[in-house]
Image (tube, rainbow, N blue to C red):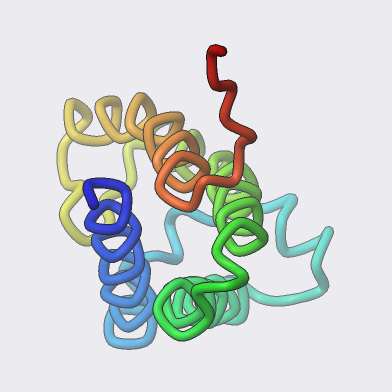
Length: 133
């Protein structure tokens, strides 16, 4: 029950953030490290839109594909790992983004990234459970 609520909350959060990437694209550009544009061949707006699409897909998948929740949990965790350099870039360069307009908020955000990774894995039961017998 709690795991289901956590999974739904994660899904809603991903969908919300995905939509925000389309509504406030410019606000997220500061999170994109310069090397990411070279590595992907996309400009900063393209990376912001692509990450928004990924968040929408992950969130929608968690809701619409319950039988795939473990795979989607791993994909969400990988996504959170992949965007972590952007969080570091934002903190390092003191750039604001929606809801992250102070150095303190940006620093706290760095420590929340591992929580999101664990949340994605736990709420989707992506990690095998070890039961005692």
